[in-house]
Amino acid sequence: MISIKELRKEFTVNDKKIVAVDNLTLDIEKGEIFGVIGYSGAGKSTFIRLLNGLEQPTSGEVFVNDKKFSHMKGESLRIARQKVSMIFQHFNLLWSRTVEENIEFPLEIAGVPKKERKQRVHHLIELVGLKGREKSYPSQLSGGQKQRVGIARALANEPDVLLGDEATSALDPETTDAILDLLVDINERLGITIVLITHEMHVIQKICHRVAVMEDGKIVETGKVLDVFQNPQETITKRFVSQLTGVEDTLPTLETIFQHYPNGSLIQLTFVGQTTEEPVLTELIRNFQVTASVVHGNMNQTKDGPYGTLIVHIDGETKQIHDALQYLQSIDVKAEVLNNGSTNNE
Ligand SMILES: Nc1ncnc2c1ncn2[C@@H]1O[C@H](COP(=O)(O)OP(=O)(O)OP(=O)(O)O)[C@@H](O)[C@H]1O
Image (cartoon, rainbow, N blue to C red):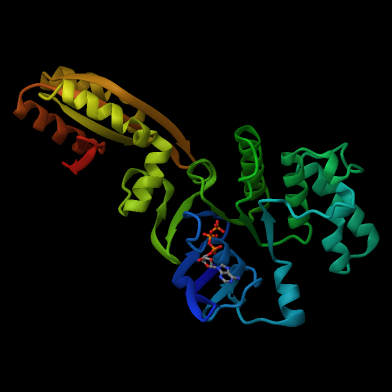
């Protein structure tokens, strides 16, 4: 659906070259919700602007539906961009136009006849849940409602791809969830491919099928969300994942616990899918004669199933602890021994 090949974007500022996107190669499937996460300056905005032709690459190519999108110009770029539309962090609405006029605007530009425009606007207003607010101006709407207008406007020309540039970053957590639910609904109902860039792991966890982690213009890790959550490889990915599980906040407490109970082992268990529902700790205590007490627990629901993190203090004979860890591995529960805040893979 979207094929990105060796994409590179350089900027020159005061004779200094900045590589914002560095040799990026990636395929995004039709109907996928694909998330790109990275810290500020990683190159996410530049990347997404390259996807819809707002920026032209220094080198490399972007194909959408097998059509070469990069290096298009003029009328052909304008038409192609109707099929790849975008929603923004600050909504980018026209303040002097009502809700329905904002949604109608891209249809006017595309030359859609008035009767058809009105029908499509009516349908889009229902789709995004704005019935009754047709005549309101953006200044009369909440942040979530403004983003609903942004989404309806982006869908007006029936795009194949919807891009989101930090689309929920200006919203409170509850509104964020409502907008994310709407995006899932649109993805499922219309089969539209969605690419979201974000610095929020919550967005990735809640709605994305796959994720790419971006750092210094490069994609350093990519995979299915559950796989990446269970087995993050890169330091930056581990940081993002631990943000979500709350483990990072618990590390100082863990050090204190470790000092108080030097005989045991603090073990971080990562569960995915159905293992989250199995009575793993009961099995450990019963079969390996160890004691196990929970220090920290966290459970999240991803698009492909649940994902849980548990930090337990396990005490017992060295051999019993070793056997218990082997048992965990055999049932696909990832176990890491935490030592004074640092982790050693077992
Ligand atoms: N138009 C531009 N001219 C010069 N440098 C730019 C331009 N756009 C981006 N950059 C630089 O490219 C790098 C990547 O920026 P980009 O905005 O793509 O990152 P980001 O991950 O989206 O971060 P943020 O979320 O803070 O915008 C940064 O060093 C930035 O200063």
